[in-house]
Amino acid sequence: MRRIAEFQLTPTARSVPQARRYVLDTLRDWELDRFADVAALLTSEVVTNAVLHARTTITLTIEREDDAVRICVGDASPVTPAMRHHSDTATTGRGLRLIDNLADTWDVEGNATGKTVWFRLATEGDAPPSIGREQLEGAGA
Image 1: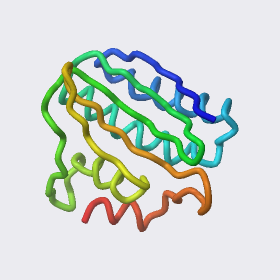
Image 2: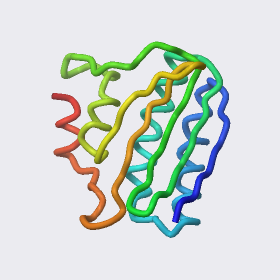
Image 3: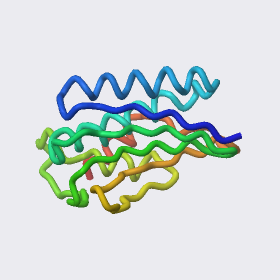
Image 4: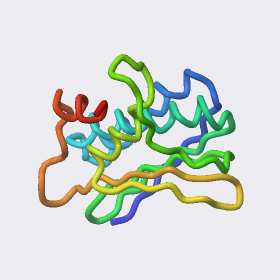
């Protein structure tokens, strides 16, 4: 069963909680509540990156596939995000590491109008990843 939900966001700080709420509401409607916390956290990270770095209109797409949820964040910047090295006291720069640690797969795809950063959470088989201290600390390594 394939379903798609899409939401347009402006490049402002208030878009981050709006995106998070949209993901939470959509996953609840699709009876995928058990993925909500991880999906909302990772969505917040990707949308924050788009707001801070792309500064263009943002398209949030949630796709339910037979065995996964795929969340895509598109913007009009051609600049590909990259994992950064940072100090232990840095307050930014951990978003892609969180995605790498918690998502089953993720990638960045360029397109004619910019790029899309997406991640996938498998809904079949194992339980969704938990957001524990180990994952958050691992993101800072």
